[in-house]
Image (cartoon, rainbow, N blue to C red; front, side):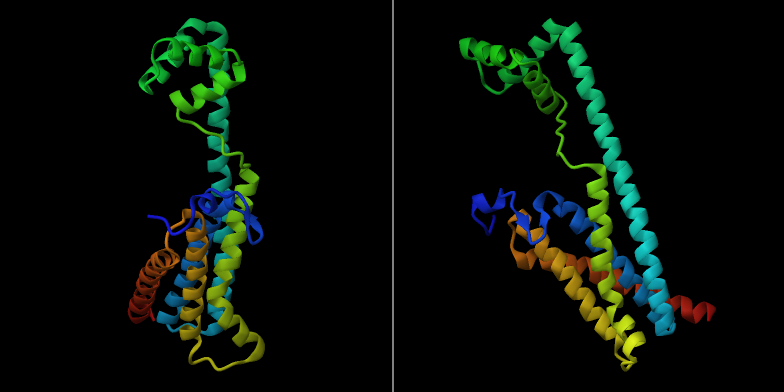
Length: 244
């Protein structure tokens, strides 16, 4: 199932320059950045727009969509944190005011896990002896809620960073063309290759954490990006014939 040793899969070491804890935000922002930016390139190319227009639209997409995504990520993460804190405070209140009921809930939880008799009572006694442990147990076992320790700001920042860095790759050829005046006839081909590279990078990082085959991780992201690119190019080409 996995191509890596268990110790490596569960490792908390950093991958290059960022924590494995933020790999989800990196993948999320990177895939969206690469696909949406290349969608702009493909759509503009399909519509026959100039390279300078592609660059302008590409950068507008990077800043606007990247910031919008990071803001959405921030509020989503903050809402989850606030919800977690609300339920945690409620658990503390219930332990103080509904102690017997909460003790019975702990007993039921571990009874379902197979604990019985004296061993069950020992487990219950240990848990309820520490209020913080008690609350943490109820949050995980009863409400199935876990605090991942990541702040809304950090998750939003990683999403925005990934969107910008990976999303810039598809328009790199067009930027070079504008700066150095290279030939323009193969720009879309170069952008396609670079986008494939960007998606491969994201797929590679994803596989480092999931422990799955790097080939599978890269193939999944390339397939997703290819479908989005093809749709964007066709839409741009159709709209160009209809309106231009």
